Amino acid sequence: MKRLKVHSAVIPGGCTGFVQAPDVCWNKPFKDVYTKCYDEWLESGKQDFTAGGNPKAAPLEEIFRWVIRAWDSLSPSLIRDSFKACGLTNNLDQSEDDQILVFKEGKCCAGKLDDFSKMMQDRTADDNDQFSAH
Image 1 (tube, rainbow, N blue to C red):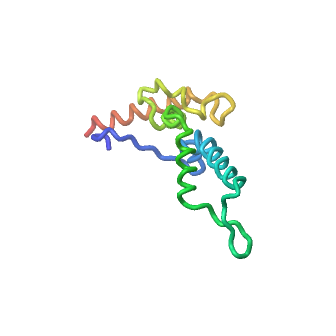
Image 2 (cartoon, one colour):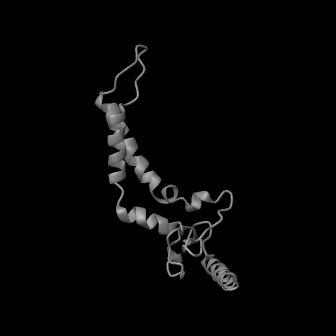
Image 3 (cartoon, helix red, strand yellow):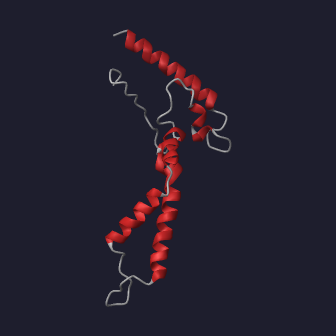
């Protein structure tokens, strides 16, 4: 992995919600638009009903349009920045660590950025020692 410049991470149980970019940053706005499309479809009266009088699911083509509309509503910068907010694509020199969402005021690790930076420096030093020993 080192030769390919791939860096691994172990995500402790219960913490995946902090590092999954969609969950952290853009699932809600995506689902809001999708739900709005669904609600508009329901209100339009375009849905078909079963023999028992229950509404049928929307046609797949309609659902695909909603997904496309919801996806198109998300800005490319939101998607790109979501990976930085989760600490997934930040510079390895720690210059972007302040963009990691969990370290922001009011979040679970507020005030812990310095501890994180120290841990990462120690890990980098250990990795370099291990790499040079081989």
